[in-house]
Image (cartoon, rainbow, N blue to C red; front, side, top):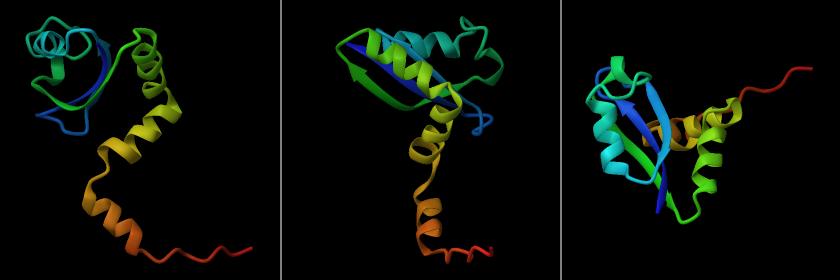
Length: 99
């Protein structure tokens, strides 16, 4: 099984990281033990979401997408938005568009 995963920094919750791996537990351990240069300064990390897929290419493509502009926007809406934020959005009254 191959995984694409999303981490959130415990110290700075707005800091996130997206990666892919075939050994999820080992990779998270590496992120938290100074073996990853890109995530070292924001550790400790906690696993926020992951998706397991059988084909190796799919998680790598999904990782690239989630690191792109539209992918970050998707992740923000679907992974990071809290239930309270969704309720607030659902109950808000849209402002009329003035032409």
